[in-house]
Image (cartoon, rainbow, N blue to C red):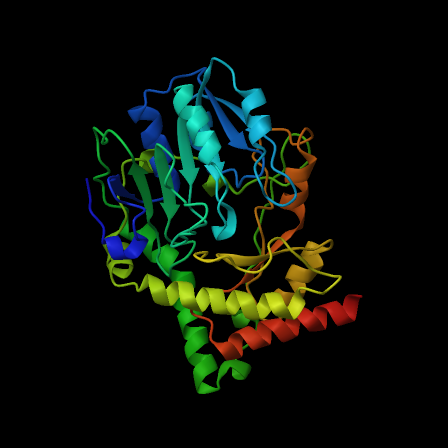
Length: 369
C-alpha cells in the first residue's frame, strides 16, 4: 500500500488503502481481479460516460447495464434501483466536473444488498464538498491526476476495506511518458510567451488547439472513441511515473482550488445570462474544485472551432461513443455528449488569461446570435 500526504486530499483518504496507477482506468481492471468479478456478473453504470471507464468491465466480460442521467448530469437513483437484479455485483457512480452526486441513500442500498459501490472521482480531484462528501461512501474510488494537474500520467485507486493482493509495480515506458509530456511543454512555452509579450508573434499553427480526432464511427453511426481509450490489460499493473508523483507531492491543493474557483466564477458571471450558452451548473458551492466550466451549446463544433482559432483549448467533452453500446434508450445522456463544451478554468490561467477567454465567449455570442 502506498501512502500519500493527507494534506492533498483532506480526510478523503482516512482509513483507506491507497494505490497509485499509471492511468485511472487501471484501477478498474485491478478491481475486477480483486473482487473476483467474472463473466456474466452485472455492473450498473451511468449512461453519460466517457467510454474509457466502461471498457475495463467489458474486457473482463461483465454485463454492463446503463442507467439514466438527466440533462443536469444528475444520476437517477430510482432508475438504478429498478435496474438492479440478483446478478448485480457493482454500481458505478461518476462525480462530474468536480460536483458531487448525492449517494448516501444509494450507499445504504448497496450495503443492504451486498453490492459494491465505485465512486469515479477522475473529474473531481481536490473537490471536498461539505454537504455531499466525495469518495466517502464507495467501497472503492478512482482518481485521475492529468485531468487536473500538469502531469503526464497517474491515477489513484482507494479501497475502504481489504487491500489489493497484487499492487501495481511495473514502471511505465519512458517513451510514453515523454510523449505525454509534449503538450505540457507546449503549454508552458505559450504561458512564458504570454507573460513576456511574445504571444502575438507566434504563428497560428502553434497557438491553436489540436482538434479531438475521432475518425471511427460506432455500428449505429455515432462518432466513436479513439482506439487509445479502449482498455489495454498490459498497462494494468503499471504504477504512476516518478515525475507525476513528484509533482503531486509538491502541489499545493489549496492554491489549485482557490485559483480554479476564481477563474470559474469570473467566466460564469460573464456568460450566465447568455442565450447562446447554458452553464451546466450554477455558482460554486463550498468545497467544489471545478474541472472546467461546462456549457451546453447547440452548435458546439462551431463554438469549439471559433475558440480554438482564438487559442483557447475548449473541448467537445466526451464526444465519442463506445462502439459496443446503443444510446437510443438514453436521449438525455446522448444530448450531454453532443452539447457540452468544456471551457478551461485551470489554475495556471491568470486574470488576464481569463478575461481574454471571457471576451472571446462574448464575441462569439455577439457574432452568432
